[in-house]
Length: 162
Image 1: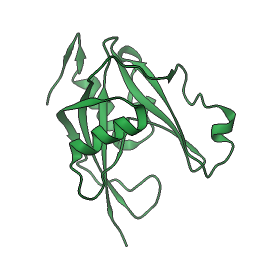
Image 2 (image 1 turned 135 degrees about the vertical axis):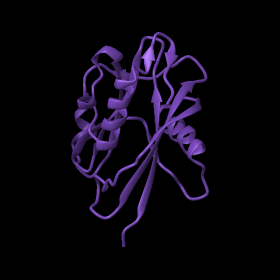
Image 3 (image 1 turned 180 degrees about the horizontal axis):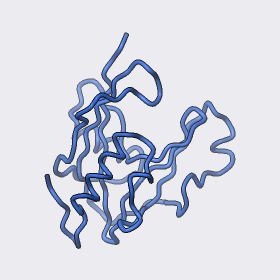
Image 4 (image 1 turned 120 degrees about the vertical axis):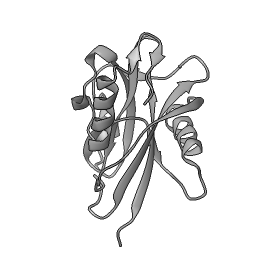
């Protein structure tokens, strides 16, 4: 039975003009994506994103303006039945960002990736000048990065809007 899988992701850019990404090990594969996750029954999209940021990063965020919602058919990367609908918002940290991050992609401890049935996640900043759609794995995230770059969405301290 085919289902819709609703995902909600955040665009967090810090004061050093860097975008936060998540490097993940899922079912034996490596992915770089924007932070966020799945919408739960009874939950609004903004509440979902606030919860996901708290669970994944420990950061308390304010969910800002809507940036993009998937406007094309995308099958799930994790099964060939679900259709993915992703919603992206700008997020701002409510407090100074204190988060353990890595400087290179997929910098996991060996124990984190030893068992292909386990999942692991580490965070990394990508400077705006180095950011391209090739830096992320998922097709919808690639569209979002392309849009951010085309609109020059971090011009000084001003975030673009659609």
